[in-house]
Structure formats: C-alpha cells, structure tokens
Image (cartoon, rainbow, N blue to C red; front, side):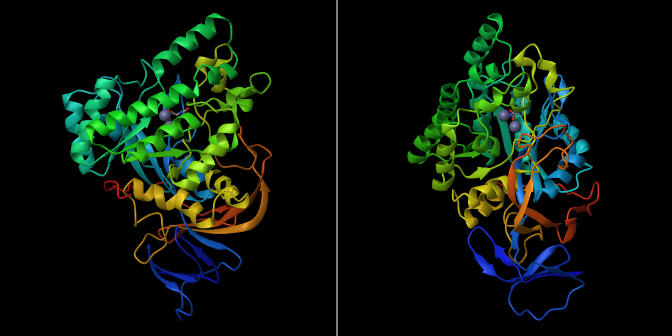
Amino acid sequence: MRTLIENGTVVTATETVKADVVIEDERVAAIGLNLGVTADNVIDANDRYVMPGGVDVHTHMELPFGGSFCSDDFETGTRAAAFGGTTTIVDFAVQDYGEGLREGLDRWFDKAGKATTDYGLHMIVREVNDQVLKEMDELVGEGVTSFKLFMAYPGVFMLDDASIFRAMRQAADSGATIMMHAENGGPIDVLVRQFLEEGKTEPINHGLTRPAAMEGEAVHRAFKLAELAGVPAYIVHLTSRDALNAVREARDRGVPAYAETCPQYLYLSLDDLGRPGFEGAKYVCSPPLRPADHQEELWKGLVAGDLQVVSTDHAPFNYSGQKDLGKDDFSKIPNGLPSVEDRFTLLYGGVEKGHIGLNRFVELVATSPAKMFGLYPRKGTIAPGSDADIVVFDPSHEREISAQTHHMNVDYSCYEGVSVRGLPEVVMQRGNVLVDQGSWRGTTGAGRFVPRSRMTA
Ligand code: URP
Ligand code: ZN
Ligand code: ZN
C-alpha cells in the first residue's frame, strides 16, 4: 500500500520545506518534489504543515490515585491523543507496595492492550530492595529504559534519599534514565496538616502548601544525587523559576540534567486554583500551578534549551464524582489534569505568539521526547525509514477548546472557551489514517508496544 501526501510544507526539528511525502506500507519511503509516483491513497496538504506525530512521554492512563482511577483508559486516552496530533505516548506502569516491578509492568501491559496508538512504558518504583534492583536491569533489556522516582507524597510514592541513590546507581549501570518527581514531600506534608488544622480546606491551599522553593530544593538534590550516582536525570512536570534555576545550575556544571514542562504551567496559574467555590479543584495537580510570572521564565527555558520537552502529565479526574472527594479537604482532591488532546495545539500557540519557532515546536512536541526516551528515529521525525506517524496540520483553523467537543473521557476542560489556531486535520500512524477531518478511523487495540533504547539525546 502506497500513500502520497502532496503539496504540503514538511516541518521537522531542522527543516521547513515544500515537499511531497511517499509512504510505503508503514514507513516513510521518500521526501521530495516531482517524485513521479502513483499511489493508492493521495492526501492533498496544500496550505498545510506536514509534521511528525506528537510524542507525549508523560501520561497516566487508568492510574490509581487518591482513592480513584484516572478517567481515561488506554482506549479513550490514546484516541483523544490522536485527535490532538499525538501518535505515541509513554505511560507510567506502577509497582504496588509488596510486589516486584514485573507484576506492575504486566498489569500495565494488560491495560494497554486496547491502545489505539503506539505506546512505550516507564516504570514507577515505589519500593527499592535487592530484587527490585535486579528487575530494573531486566526491564531495561525489554525496552523499559526509564524509571520514575518520587521525592513527594509520603506514604504513597515517596522514597528516601538512600533508596533514590540505590535506584540511581542501578540505573547508571544499565544505561537507564531516572525521571524525578521533585518536590520535598516532608515539609509539604507538615504544611498540609497545619493548613487543615487551621480550617483552610479550599483548593487554593493545595498551591499554598507546596511552595516553589520546595521544588527548587528537590531538583537541586535530585541532580546532586544523580551526579554522585553517574546517571542522567530528567525532572518531570517542572513548574517554577526556582526549579528551572536548579536545572540551569546543574547543566552549567556539565551534569546530564534534563527537564520537561507541561502546557498547564505555561498557560494556567495559581489564580485558576483560586477560582470561586470548588472550581479550583479542576486545576489541582502536583507540583501545583504557580503565580503567572513563572510562565515567562519557562518559555525562556524552552527557547534556551534548559527545558527539552513539553509533555502533558495527562491525569484526568472528573469534576463530578472524583475531584469532589476533596470537597471539604483539599488534600483529598485527586491530583492531575486532562490535556493529552490539547498539548500539540496549545504549544503551537507558542509559535503564534512568537515565543518559539516552528522547528523548535516540532522538536519540543515530537523529536526531542523521542530522542530522550529511545524512540528516535523510528518516532519523532519524518525521514526515510521512520514510521509514517504524520500530522497534516491546518495552521489557520480557528476553534474553541471545550469539554463538549473534546474526546478525553472527562467532564471538564481546563481550557474551556479558550480560542486556539491550528487543527491536526489528518493524523496517521504507521501509514494508517487514525483521524480524518474530525472523524475517527482508528482501531481499538491496533496500538503497538514500542520497546525503547537508551537515551540518545
Ligand atoms: O498531579 C499529578 N501530577 N498527578 C499525576 C501523578 C504525578 O505525580 O505525575
Ligand atoms: Zn509526578
Ligand atoms: Zn505524572
């Protein structure tokens, strides 16, 4: 089966060129003009950008959290991702207390069987012991080459520094990457208890009890430990100037220090957590949204390269029936926001507003995450031999984001009524059309597990 995408402008992390793209079965075969080929399927991309499918390396499908499960599973979540221009996710398998990594990973493979897009898996390590350390090596051999550790959520996910250091040394030996949730959970927990005792129960207090200084401290500590262990470390969902300065400081010293931020930290703020009534609960995530003046600094980090990736941390919970578990106690509001469908277009807003260029946009949403997490060049670019994961993007299409029209399985949008330009009009995975002009053409279970190599950034 041959597909030809003609008359478009092909945009990669390094080039913007008028060119046609030929796809043979699942792979890109040629890029150029006047290729003189006939095809079974021809897509006209006149006035459109032809971009690599997005790679979102931070999602939580069906994650158990705070007495509830994220409302998107691999079927609904990957379908929504595809509508938004993302064709590969990397989700987090979770080790439960008292079990090995293998059981947690198998549980995630069961969940992921219904994925409609390709996916990889990271592993969240909640307990470190000799058996777990051995299993880390085995998982790396099977294409699970990154491990997330937590410095926050005492009693739920948090590891002490000794356990973190042991896991880091093991990862260093096998060439894996450590991903860190960097917030100092101890003092945060003290503040949470104090605020609740003082009767401060509203959602805004989630933000006020998790100061940016405690994120900055944890990022600094994470990189010091990683340096000692000799492992590359990647900070997930970085939110603040304090944390970014700690990344800059480590990188300036030559440490393999990396970080992502997420659309919510670029576009939303503490003011959203303070919305009237209980509405702020829609915006509860950790680390929390910050005062708006942190946003400009994050954009600077994306331009300068101190932040290498924009992912979503997609962790949706319904406002009605899930977020309201914390109606009388902000600490019981499940942490997380929906955004897997909106990342591509929201970040394209950064191009529209002049924060970043078009090639940097592609780098941040596709190429760099693919490189960081061992998916490149199969994913994250358009090049001969790469998987034909392609977005035909209409940059002039104007629309409003709304829960009425999004495809995520969640009853609200953090961006309700926000006007955006740009629409992933045709979205293709390995040469198969998943989305065509707003219609779903994908197949439940057609997504494949992609074993990942070690970091190539
Ligand atoms: O609030 C968040 N970020 N929820 C998902 C779990 C995590 O820490 O990434
Ligand atoms: Zn986290
Ligand atoms: Zn997360």
